[in-house]
Structures are given as structure tokens and as C-alpha cells.
Image 1 (cartoon, rainbow, N blue to C red):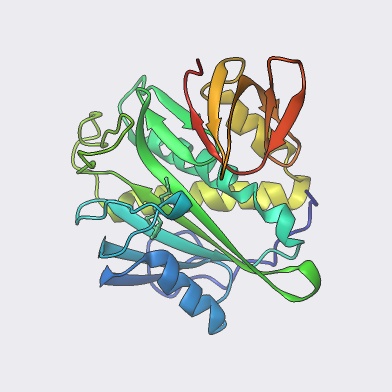
Image 2: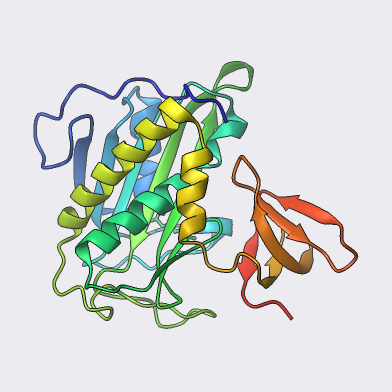
Length: 264
Ligand code: BTN
């Protein structure tokens, strides 16, 4: 990934407690904050535009799944306009996970057992607490028009019908955390990591992600679009793809899929 992917941030926000460069658009109820952010981006909204809603009627997760979106949780989508090829933006999902993980560590109880699961889950005690949905839109000649970084955090409520363990910040001992307080800390950490990515490239983001990663060195099952593979989760590539070593020793690099721990 190149080290000069970002345009300078927008001028400081006229309102909000968000760090300079972020401008907040608050909604009571939307279909999806990612859709609202895309709409604003298509109308010319700059890097740092943030859409937050109290609830979503059509919250989306990865791979076309629904995202449970009642009031009380955080639903936030941020417009970024990186000046780099579209392919170089995929690591922003890991970058956002690192930023969100740091925000939760800063705001949560001491000794919080926080982990990151490739590519976009934030776990507490091994249970999913937050997810990131990165949606990139192509510009001309393979460049990037804009990227939407959507984040959903189960602050007060977690869904009850998932095939994997889930939890909420309330259940994890965070007390009564307001969504906007979490957004403030998250955007501050995001600004830090976006700046670092811009100046130094992806290597530091990758190291920070690895330091909190769940499952490196373990056997995993990986659900792909039409396929499923099992193997050892060896590492991340320089761009943030997963490296899996299969039983016959072959290594595969996977850019998108669903990791299931532990593998058979
Ligand atoms: C996942 O884990 O599958 C990703 C979930 C991302 C959910 C967030 S909530 C805010 C933004 N708006 C959406 O519709 N989705 C993302």
C-alpha cells in the first residue's frame, strides 16, 4: 500500500465534539448510515464526513447480512477520499478495527479482553461486539472516488439469534456509554491511524492489528464465496489479506471471506 493515499482532512468542524477534520451529520432513523454517507459523498462531501443514526431500518453487515440496529447502539459511517488505487483501500477495514479496538480499550473496564478477528470484527471475551463494513467506490482509471467506513457497535443491545457468540458493551462492564462519546474516541483514534497510514504506509497498521489478532497460528475454517478451505492462519500479507497454509503445505492468500475458529 502506498504511503500517500489520503487527501488532507477537511477544515475543522463547526459543531461537534469530534476531532478537527470530522463533520458530523446526525439522524434519528435511516435505512443504513453507509447509504446516507454514500449519498453525501456522491454529492461531493469531503473526507471526514461522518453520518451517525440513533437506529437503522436496513442496517447491513458483510456478505449481504442484516445488522441488528435498535436504538442505544452506535451506527456510524465515515467518508474517506484516499488518493490511491481502489485495491489499496481494503486494508482500511483493518485500520478501522484497530482504531475501534483502541477506543474500546480506552473507555472500557481495566483488563478488557479485546480481540480482532479478520477481517472486521471486534470481539470482547471472544464474542462479537462490533463490525466494520468497508465500501469502496471506484473513480477514474482504477483510482478511488471514495470509501465509506461503516462501524456498528453493540453498546446496549446485542442480537439474540446469531450462529456465533455476541455481546454488548453493557454486558462487558462499560456502564452507560453514550454512542456519541464512543464516536468521539473512535474518530480520534481513526484520525491517528489514517495519518500514520498516509505518512508511513500500511506496515504499522498491520502490526497493530496483529498484536490484537485472534487466531494467528491456529487452524481455521474459511468460508469463501463458493468454497470452504481449512488450514493454518499463518499471517497477513503486506496489504492485509489472510495467508492460509493448507494441509499439503500450499499457501493461499485470501482477500475476502469468513473465518470460523477453530478449524477442524
Ligand atoms: C459486519 O460485521 O458484518 C459489519 C457490520 C457493519 C454494520 C455497520 S452499522 C453502521 C453502518 N451502516 C450499515 O448499514 N452497516 C454499517
